[in-house]
Image 1 (tube, rainbow, N blue to C red):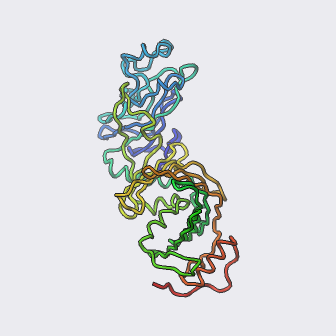
Image 2 (image 1 turned 45 degrees about the vertical axis):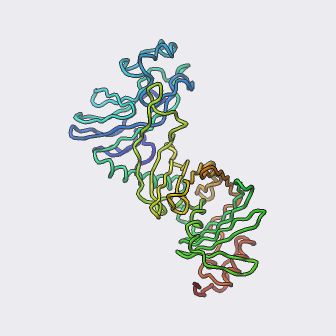
Image 3 (image 1 turned 120 degrees about the vertical axis):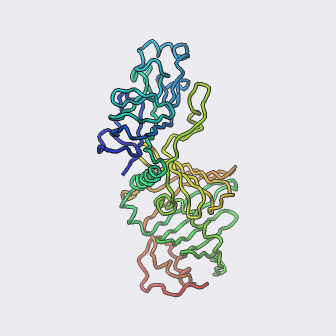
Length: 402
């Protein structure tokens, strides 16, 4: 399985494959464990940034480095400390080496016609003290068939993210009950969600103005009015209900999304010859996807831990709606599984915050979702009030009403 960051102690790969490496502040040549052959055609691309002068903001550059012609004048202290390994190339640029043949990578280069091990480094000579480097470039190595390899690596990265959140332990979650304190343009509100596998969801939102509640079973949905003891068909709300399973969505990135691919980094030059500043670019490993309705989605993973950092998708699978952008802020670990605890959600000009005050794995019986009937709804209501209880003595087996 390909992880977001591959260590030099990883298993040697005889043939070039997609890999992702972090190259930056150590000063050492990074052994990619990729053995290049003369017939191979590799594309090496880099993202993120390095700040080469003790982390000073004005020294931050993308992988093309700082222009050589202005380096000594702009950073006289750095330039006087030592000479770069390749003084003819930009300072701090990403470089490679194959069989003692140096290669200027910059933002992107193609490696072919060479034979030997591929190494990566930064064109700098000071990695400690006053002028030390801070930050790392995220480097993607793509083999000759980029589409096929990107799809394979994207899927592997999704598997790495699921493993980082709990892996096999996630499979033990058959039900999940959560309650979140939320804020939005209209003020404060509370969201409660019960999810039971597979595809059974009870969703409720409450505010000072009232509450709304929906139940989804498979491809059917109902709106529930508890005061009147009534329910009405609401199949058009099915995607809305599924879309609010934020707490559970990340555990099913491999099922709820498809076509996982790694886009190759690209950005416009800035005034120093580098890419756009970090504030305008991803500082993570990005995997692009499609949801079950064919709408675009994407997730950004921490390059060191593989944990999700950001998630974007179209609400209800509708491409015309503003994209939902989630900043994943904190996690809570329960029985070896990391649950999303807090996040900020942006959609157009609207901003919402969620903080889960209650996260209860396997807290509700599957029997409560076995049918949509007055008896079932009554039992669900009791469990929402009481919390976890023992299984009912008799299962609910009344048929689903249309």
